[in-house]
Length: 469
Image (cartoon, rainbow, N blue to C red; front, side):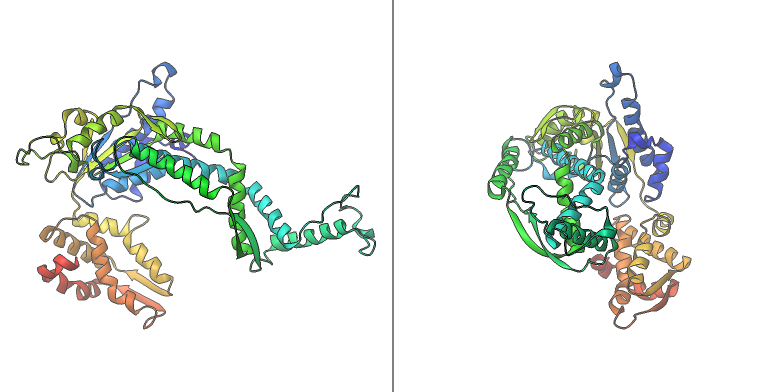
């Protein structure tokens, strides 16, 4: 799987990729594309200055549902970089019960290790599939144990092969070859076999507490997991099609070098890791907050703990030490109650690039419903197509849905593009219930009249729209 460095995407190419999924917000896309390209520039800069180039962290400011989280998520997917989304409001100051901010780096490391191991398994998949095939053959036709000196099974001289005078090993080998052909041709896919697989279940444990306790909890889980698990195996009866997948995965796990996977993952976290801190405005003390005395352990306390992580420090994880100097941090918040300037000055300075995202208009909703690869209209078309019902959206219907969404947002509560989910859900409620019992095939056209019929009453009744939409 190619990383952003190997793909060598330019800022304009990154923006065009993001445009496939996110409508508008060009300034935000521009900023994140530059931040991503700067990583490639740093890695290709002269070695003596490379370590001095630090990423410019970004603060995305804008109301809910305008695409802040989606931009970060698509960016990480595009870069194939370790990505972790965290809620700032879940952390508390070190020394108090709750999650400490270092846990986001530990979680990011776990994500990276899982990602690297998956990539390594993909590389050895062919060899693992061959080994899995041998294991299936061993179950179907157990090999003959060789005793003493004997002849190897000869594949040559097939014409002169005589079953009566052939040894057990020769007969066994020929039978295995016939079954191998059947396996490759897919003739035995539904046949059930009993396979022995390693038990992947381990007790889950999480410890919340003062600094270091959470990490100790993770290590304790590993210790207890290893004591209880060992090399425990369980027998399962499965069709060959399922057993092949399971055994291939197990063989791939054996083939990869776990130590080098951990080292590669740690390096990837440090060079390419992206941490998206959502709801960062919730840890900013409002300037009009009534002058509450003393630091709040879930606000200023968290901000102070975030400082060294965002600035660059060494975090101890169970896999090794991770330096956060070159991890890209993207903060995000609506900042309705508080302002970015309400954050402590030191933390403000750690997010030098600030991008304000715009509220979505009716025209934006039209684009969101029709242009992206994962547009809601395309999702509903695909869902009902699976039932044999074809849906066609008229342009006037999409425009009407967008108008209603914009109207409800302005009159009730502005929740951005998330409003489209509730509108579409109400629009298709009757249809989704009728398929496939009353309607099991045919073509249905969604026009303006149908949209008005399904949604006008709800929009008119503002009190009802508070609850339904």
